[in-house]
Length: 203
Image (cartoon, rainbow, N blue to C red):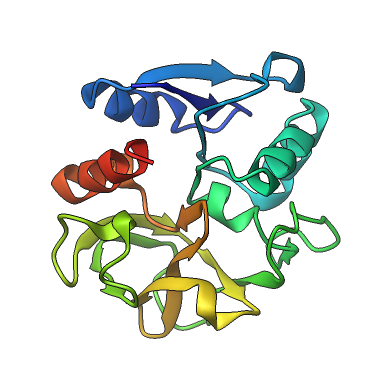
């Protein structure tokens, strides 16, 4: 299996993602600066735990934002996880005034008041494109593990690949061409999460 780039910008769940990938016999290289980024990565994973603003600042300071944009545009398979999903949009209510990567139009929103935040634990997802390779081998409404208080609201609803209901429906995953991104944590989602990662590694 060819090498998978795992981006390190100080996100707390890096090791758990690396362990999950290694359990699938993936060849993983951890990259923490733009200077270390391979010229031709086979695929890229951007994990994330923490705030939108701090994460974007770290990506920029480490010189990682530009190669992420460049390789996504070049068609390299890409998977964003949790904050690594949120960073693909223009901005977030969590960090007003801080621009995201801007791969997609849309903003990251906070859950409406009146519910327990963060949304933490297992929840089902309703897949909008059951036949996509991302969901191969998964149930029609697979359960994944979530930990978040914010969620992206894509301007283009056609990229939404799964929705989850937490007293309001939100985009739990998006897919467009070579790019997959999920709000849940596949590395913490047992068999369903490992299957999704296995599907991504097959790209």
